[in-house]
Amino acid sequence: MTYIHDTIVRLQKTSPAQAEFYQAVEEVLDSLQPILETSEKYKRHAIIERMVEPERQIMFRVPWVDDQGNVQVNKGYRIEFNSALGPYKGGLRFHPSVNAGIIKFLGFEQIFKNALTGLPIGGGKGGANFDPKGKSDGEIMRFCQSFINELYRHIGPTTDVPAGDIGVGAREIGYMFGQYKRLTGNYDGVFTGKSLLWGGSLVRKEATGYGCVYFAQYMLADQGDTLAGKQCLVSGAGNVAIYTIEKLYQLGARPVTCSDSSGTLYHEAGINLQTLKELKEVRKVRLNEYLSAHPDARFIPVTDYPADGHAVWRIPAQLAFPCATQNELTEADAEALVANGVIAVSEGANMPSTQEAVEVFLDARICYGPGKAANAGGVATSQLEMAQNASMQRWSFEEVDEKLKVIMKNIYLSASTTAAEFGEPHNLVLGANIAGFRRVADAMIEQGVV
Ligand code: NAP
Image (cartoon, rainbow, N blue to C red; front, side, top):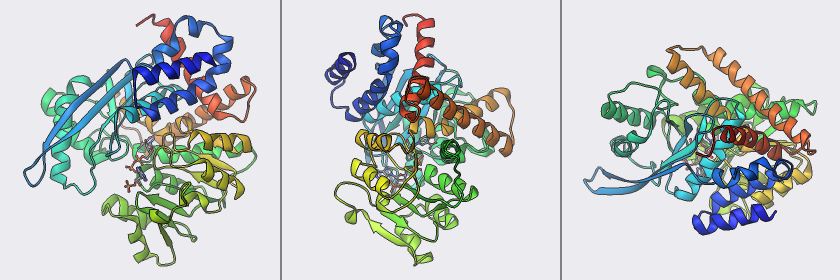
């Protein structure tokens, strides 16, 4: 315990004001306690001390010109956290809340998530405190080009392979790839999440959401249950939320909510997927516009949220899929979910539940799939995109989806058997963290002190 405590205290001194990063480190280290106690080699090789320190952190200025001719400046980041298992792999996030601590928490989580997939990928993450909302296409393009004017020298198909995340979809990946190609002269698989027209993989767009639902399916199957007929809560209305909703319908469940930063939509008849895609993928507008097509739905603005949490988690349902952002599900939200009879929570977003909320789920012995296991389908399919690019092949939708299902099943099995091995079979947080850690740590030991 002192070892973990000392590590956090040291991080607070050496990397000040990075609350989300300490939160992610603490959660991982807490669950590593049983393995750190039984295998002294990890301490001897200073694995924890090395793992919490990124191999490389790149921070840079991103100047660009807006439509009015004004010069704007943002902060860009790429954190290359750990390459023991393969090239750095992880998305880019464009959101005004981005700072070094957020990118570090995401990069740290990514190490274990990528290890859990069983694929040869290291962990990294990046982004900028740029807000794409309300920007014209030209502004987005100029921003992406400027971002790559610095980042291109640090990335490559066998060194560091970025993808999308919040605020970064196929359009942004297209502009960044175009600029990378112009600067380097290389046409290679340096990004994943590319358009299907020029090197993208089928199922990549759907993969995180689909994978998160497959994960819930495997958790329920172990309890002799299925998704069929279950009422589900989904938060977010972006890439992950939309394809979580799509897969829930395909497997016979009924998603009744989604949300964005303006509020929560509750449609008891079931969220209309076509309307949602039209609003968010095509028109890119606020969620309350859904009501014009479906007046029987209800929109709860953020101003009406409970003071201690989020309106979406107060609606009774059997399954919950947090798919928006970090810390969007509080202890009070978790208590409300459990009181309302939720039987499983599968996280599409990264660290959406606060540490206190996770404790509530674990104490209640419900099925709880932590993000680093449940949302790993996205990065796994990114690796399948890299494999197709490197071999100049193109696999069918069915082929990729089948591989995704197998990967999600293996992730579930790896987390659940490891949890059982350490005497806490219901605790997939412990199982996922130890299983991911062991793979990375053993590779680091074999590669020497580097
Ligand atoms: P996205 O397409 O940009 O959608 C994000 C959604 O969450 C939007 O509906 C957004 O609403 C909402 N949101 C974001 N920040 C918010 C905030 N601070 N408060 C309230 N709502 C907020 O992003 P995404 O790719 O779906 O990512 C969602 C989550 O999944 C993130 O945690 C991401 O790290 C994680 N994830 C994504 C992938 C992937 O393949 N894309 C893979 C693994 C994990 P507004 O539009 O109103 O802001």
